[in-house]
Length: 272
Image 1: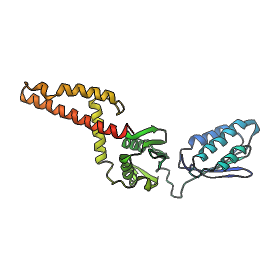
Image 2: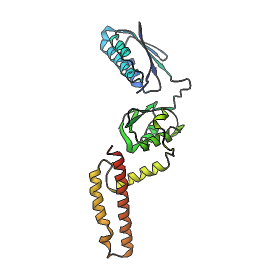
Image 3: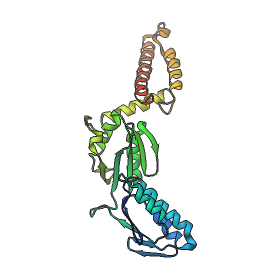
């Protein structure tokens, strides 16, 4: 996760300032449970180097190093100095990102990581907010973690980001976004709850019609389309009563339209 560490200094001690917005509960528990020579004062932890506990101390420094490696301005020299100077007392300071930090709010970073994907990072995540955003990007999700979602970068997902970052609350929680808007520009804005949601609903309904759970089961979709198209084709029901013919004709058109919708969706996404 980017910028989890605000600052790192290596002098007589190793001094690290960590952003409290991110999920560092496990990291703090590790410190509390692993070190006897430990001094705690408010949000400052001083871990004294202990020769008898050298392996745990190495793990601590490596964990800090791994967080530092994910900074945008990562410096190899600083990282190397940190790892090589692990036999020092370590001071970990937990700092709030800003004075107005709200423990009940959800802080979300949207960051482009390549020309084909971006990530949504959650600090102080709430399950309802996480699931809401997961639902919005459902058909473009590439990977999911406890506090991060990797999403395919395309026109639709850009539009979704544009709509999402305009929100100030989600599912009753205050939300604050960090995002480089230029990475998601040149897309006409629209309501998340509007056209895109309707489009995604149509996709879901079409998938259900062909008995699959996702667009990547394309061979199954084609096989089921051929079966249903043959079953409902008007030419097979010419001799039946008019009402029955109309019903089958309507079903045939629905199958055809659903297949064409999924075919377009598949060509735009699954083949990228």
